[in-house]
Length: 388
Image: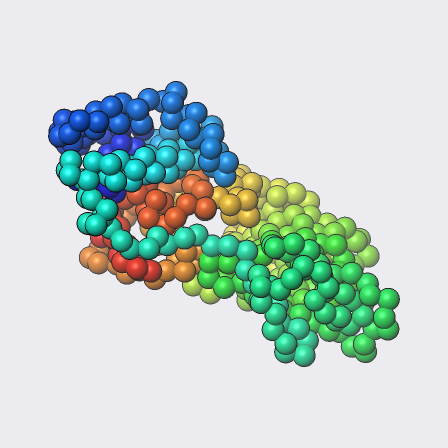
């Protein structure tokens, strides 16, 4: 039995999803060699497992077990997969234990160190971005030292720490005209920015923000592609505008999220608090907290009420949120965060995913939770092969 297969069976047993044939397969493995049964009893002991989970600080062990919920949707039949942090953490503990066991009992029905999988794990994204200055100079921020990086239009550009930059007045005479900078994140990257007015921006992977180094006019306007979360500094005299594709979001002081990737058909603007006005396609709507504006050229501008806005911005806190996301939507998120390609073999299963899972997990660990009855995944280097 391979390490991945054993890990899957043990986690399914912990979560109460183990089928009869799978239970028999696991029991047969446990009976194959001395120590296997003791190991199985240890890693499936919930009290001991929860104590081990305390070691994994980035994963919330209190969110519960993996649960499956079947639902009949009005527009189609689908499976909703519920993925939660406790089981994500459990998978890591189990995987580490399984690997250790394979080293000790390599002849007991598990791959020895020489025959085990040697593929390098696909690691998650990190804090990395490129800053393009007004003159075209490019700064790779994760390799730049902390402190002052440049003077732009009489404003100091400062690398605050390993994940953020900010702007502050330099005391020098400002250049004539407005000076623009551009912050870009690659696949598998994210970064934070404090604009000259004090607005905080979290930039998700494969995203670009084009902005002035000061706001001397009657408004504050930036341009976005990709996804970003904004906490706008209040300034009633100067409204804040975010331009994305064919949409403009106007705010005075608020926090909201915009998702506008080129490969996504719909622009989504989600309001956490305050008030924003979305203008797109000749229509204009005003959002309230926990409402989401959705715009595409085919359906125009619509409002979805009662959304879980805190969940939608959980990406900035290191968590994937799959709110009834289709398989392809989930795969696009993984492709951007892990910098991988996705290939579909056969028909794409009609499934939906719900819940949360930690973005710090290696890709193979995350795929173990998505790999269920209706869809399977095979990882080859930096390619996810999706199989029905």
